[in-house]
Amino acid sequence: MQTSQHSLTTLVGLLREQVKSVADLNPVFMPTVDKVDVLGELVALESQVAALRLRVMASAGDVAVESGDRSVAAWLSRTQRLRRSDCVADGRLAEALDRDLPVLSTALREARVNLAQARVIAAAVGELPDRVGAEVIAKAEAELVRLAADHDPKDLTVLGRRILQIVDPERFEDEERRRLQGAERQAALRQRLRLRAVGDGLTRISGVLPDAVAARLATYLHAFTNPRLAEGAVRGSADDAGTAEGEERGFGQAVNRPRRLAEAFGQLLETLDPKRLPIHGGDATNVTVTISLDALRDGLGVATLDNGVPGDGFEAITAAHARRLACNARIIPAVLGSDSEVLDLGRASRLFTKAQRRALLLRDRTCRAEGCDIPGTWSEAHHLRPWQGGGETDLHNAVLLCSHHHHRVHDPGYDHRRLASGDLRFHRRS
Image 1: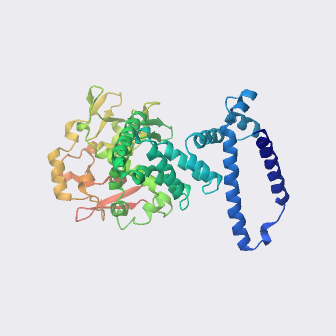
Image 2: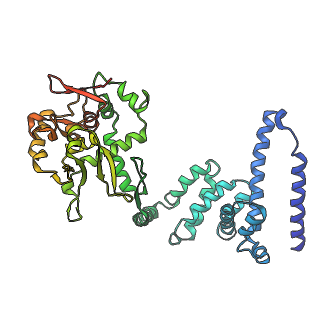
Image 3: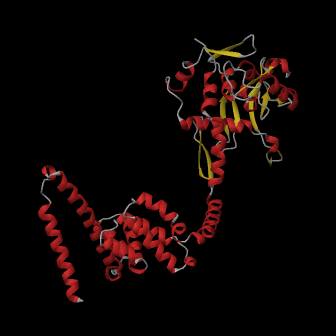
């Protein structure tokens, strides 16, 4: 055994000398067929050297004891200046190959799998529960090694997740159900959502959600980002088609996908009915906008929005934005007089009733901006003559507008006029 150890040390030294002797050779002028052969042989050599290194690591616990390191992985990281996480991962793989994966270990030594494939196979086999039995686990290992001849690590990862279905179909369904139940429990425990006001008019939202919740959210957002509907939403009118909207959103370029999703998220929230939400703070869930009566009338100045986001708790918005929100029954405007007394807190006469909304939907059917075909069920009731300017909450003073055009009608950068058909035509102010 002593002779074998000395032989290994000697052979490794000789191997390094041989590699060093060809290190300065220039491969530029090698024939293509030789390059093909050499590249393949070098990959195989790397796999065999990696296998040898892992075998030595598996039996090198005494190295850590001698040096006082926590493990041979820690010793390697410290003395060879390697990334610690890589050394730890290799240490685990070395132990698995030495203890549990004889077929994979042999395949790596013979260069029938490479190191990246070996890591994937070991991980896939390691995830199989002990209850499937040693025989099934051995079959899974052998099958993945066989598949490695035709599949790269990415494909092997996919096959590894389904390996039980390949080697033991009868057991797969039950195990898959157990796995999904466990994953769902973990997802419920690990889900997080954070909102943080940045301070520049934006709030940062970050988090992780269970797949089922994320799928529902994606489905709802896609309903608002349907290309056909989106085309209608940005078309607006013949006056601003392809020019004003394009200029405002990116110099004639199409709105990018993340921005469209963000806009869709805002539209989704505006379709929610607060009456169907839980009681919040002793009252129905709502958002309150505070603004002075003068600012609400002339559209100048600013308002504050109780946003419920950790931070200041209140965010400033333009009066024009507040005027748009005042049309929406889901937003409560707190209108203040000159002495800050509350003149109005969303009185019922400001809001269109459910019956009026149904009548508007029957009459208008879609958003009434010229050329827009966003469904009326996704649109908002707008006062043609502003409520704060004396306009009545009645059908003759109402029109349905999608969220995009409801923003536009309150945008001081745009004018609009009502056509004989009842549609609104927008054009940019010069």
